[in-house]
Image 1 (cartoon, rainbow, N blue to C red):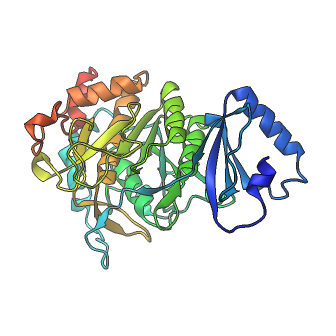
Image 2: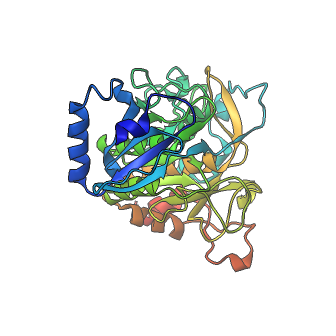
Image 3: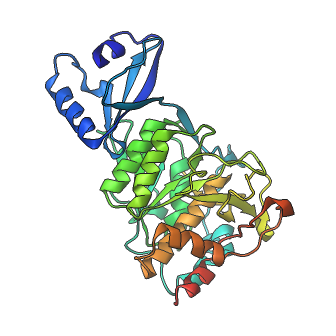
Length: 378
């Protein structure tokens, strides 16, 4: 059935995710698939997604829906984008040369430098599911560990967009002498390249990125991207990672909406992040309201960029990386904290923000690294 549905033509095809009802059904299919080599001369036409007992493949448009006792559901594999940050200086990336500029305003705002007396995030592994990372950037030297390129597994997850490098710098840059410092300058970044040079991926790429993070025992997964449509596949992957104690942090979106945020931030298993500007004011572009769990600086954030440069970007993506850094600091001191513990602690120790309407319900605040650590008994 699948062989006929996939076909040989590349015209008018769509990617789909096929979920099996049980783990054993998935395992049986994969074993049969391996034996059916003559039907599938190119093995890459089917991508296994073990974490959700599913496969991803491209099927001919208009082909009748596959019906089989082992199949639970079939979902279209839809595109997803990094939360498009607005480049303030697209022609001239901001090149920092003086040590006096080494701590960006957002890192100072959340009181990370005061927290460094207690912890700098050592031994915490953070999977950054994004566009990859610039391995040659001096501020990230010693902070990059093993990752994966889901677009081409034979290549390193090298960043050809810039977004992933920017996120990684805010989390863990550690060049005090001539560059910048991130929130957790001793944490380890594991780059998971799921997005292409345009900042676009498919849900299946994200699911496989989460799968990699689970199998490689990440403590935190940073997801600075989003989409409007709910995906059962993405929710299953998030739920499974959450059950295993991995903290998942995601950006809420940049449409300035009062009552709606993007997926995966909207899932209850995720810590959803909104962006603030200076003076703890919610950034005009940030989604806001009761769906936000925590806010962090996201306006005009300077961080690492391609070719040893620095860029100033704005977006809830940038806010999310601040939160991942603070969680790394917390986990160094209390590694037994659950994702639920961390979410409630971040909220309990946050500082009030301005820019929310009173009818929006519970007011999430801006993260405060020092207050969070004090609450842990340090």
